[in-house]
Amino acid sequence: MNDHVLDDLEAYALGALGQADAQHIAAHLATCGSCRTEAAALAEVVGTLPDAVALREPRATLRERVIAAARADLQPTTAGDPRRRSLGSIRPARVAFAGLIAAVIVLGAIDVDAYRRVSSTTAERNEYSAIVESLRQGARVWYMTGKNDFAGSGGTLFDPRADGKQPFVLFHDLPAIPQGKVLTIWLVSPDSTWARAATFRPNGHDIQWVQITAEIAGFDRCAVTLDDSPWGRHGTIVMESRIAPPTSAP
Amino acid sequence: MSDQQPSDDALLSSLAARDLGALASLYDRYGRLAYSLAYRILGESEGAEDVVQDAFLSAWRGAPGYRRERGNPRAWLLSIVHHRAVDILRRKTTFRPAPLEVAELQPGDEDTALAAERNVEHRTVRAALESLPQAQRRTIELAYFGGYTHVELSELMGVPLGTVKGRMRIGLQKMRRALERSR
Image 1 (cartoon, rainbow over the protein chains, first blue to last red):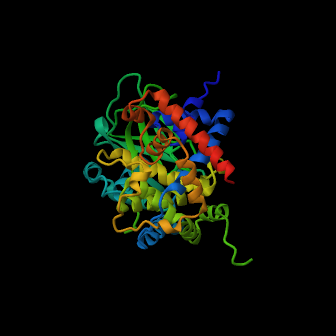
Image 2 (image 1 turned 60 degrees about the vertical axis):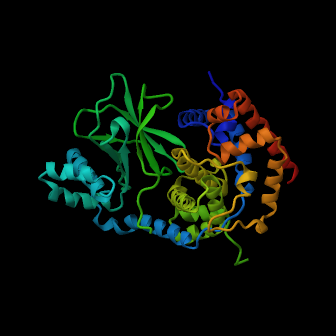
Image 3 (image 1 turned 120 degrees about the vertical axis):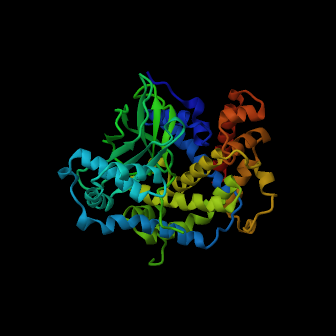
C-alpha cells in the first residue's frame, strides 16, 4: 500500500501545512520516490519566490553577529579535547546528575528554578561539577522547556561528540501521562524536517535518562510530543528547544 | 582564475569543515536576500535580523548533514530563513503581511527598499507571479509570505479547502511553465 500525498504537496512546498500534516508528508516523502520527485519540482518553483521580494539592506552589524555566533559555536569543540573524559567510565546515574547540572549551569539563565532544585537536593554537587566540566567540553547541548501541562519540566539533549558515545536526553520533573500514551523525542533539521529519535514513558522519577540512537548531525533543534502511539503522526508538542541555543553574540 | 568565486556547494563543504571565512562569504552572497525575505514575512527589521542570524547559524551547524536532494545551497538556506520567519509569525497574532503589491507600497522603517537593484531573476519571478490570476497569486503569496496554512486560507478567503489547494496547484504549475519559458 502506498498512500500518496500529491493532494497536499503544493501546500507542503509553500510551507502552508500545520506541523502535524507537514510531518506526515515528510515521512511519506522519505519512502516514496514518485512523490519526492514531484515535491522537488515544486520546491524548485517555490524556491524562486524569495526573488520576488524587494531587496533591503540589513544593518552592517548583522554580519558581525552571524560570524560571532558561529565563532562562539566553534569554541567548545576546539577547546575541550584535552580534558574530555570518556563517558564509559561514569555510572549512568552520575551521568544523569552531571547532565542535569551541566544543563542548568550552561543554560542557567533559562531555567534558574531547575538549578535551585537540583543544587538543594544533591550534596554531591562539587563532585559532579568536575564531571560537568568534562561533559561541557566538546558537547553540544539543547535545553527543551516544558509547556502547558509540562510547564516546570524540561529536558536536555546532550551530543557528547566523542567517538562511540551516544547522545542522550536528560529529563527532569516529567509529569505522569495518560495510560496508552507515549512521549516521543524528535530531532528537527534546519529546514524543519522532523525525525523520530526515541519513544518512552515517564518512569515517575525526578530525573529520567533516555538514550538516543539516531544520528544528531544535521539537526539543530529538538522537541518532545505526547502521542497516541510510537509511530504515525505526532501529537501535541509538550516540550521544545529554543530556535537556536544561546550564543555569545550581542 | 585565482579570483574566481567558490561555488555555493564549495562554500557549504567549507562550512561543514568549520571554516568561518566560508560563512562570511555565504553571508556576503545571500545575507541581503535572506534579510529581505525575513523582512517581507515579519514586516520589521529587528525580528528579520534575528531570523537571519539564526538561519546562518543553523546552516553552519547543519552543513555536515546537508544533502543536495533538499535543494541547492541557496534554496536550502532560504528555506531555513522562510521556516524560521514563518515559525515566528505564527506565534504572533497581531501581524500578518499584506499581499505583495500592498506591502511594497508601504514605507520602510530605517531600511530603504533598494528597488533600483532588481536583477533579471527578480524581474522574471515577479513577472511569473504577476501573470497569475489574482486568486491564485493571492493564495500563493498569503501562504508563502503570510504564513497561513491552507486551512486558515480556506477560512480567510471563504472558499472550500479544495479550492485553496486547486489555486496553489494551478498557480504553481503556471509559474513553473512561465519560469521555464524565460530560461
